[in-house]
Length: 153
Image: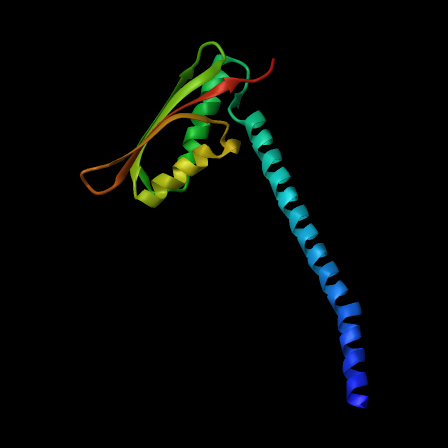
């Protein structure tokens, strides 16, 4: 008889306390997960907007814009084991402040690292065309055509 009473009390506690607490815990966990996903979505959206706003803005003046683009292209190769590096930049027309070209050869990892640096919005460069070509010596050649846009005057 005592065992039946204890079993009934245990069942009552389980149904009355444990199950509602589990439901609350699960609802809180789901709410937290939704909040985290929303925060990450908003963070990614804000980052995209900031990058779009900052990407490719060049200083005023044709010579300054070409110089800034040339330096951005050069910075992308800095510290990498790349050879046959050729960089050119010239003033652009219309909304394009400057146009430039980078050609370099090296190991695939170094070439891809340079491409990644250029693709980063903080580089100040907008990529128009990127080509990766295997050279006869087994290295990879990167050919990049890039430009920068005029900043708000």
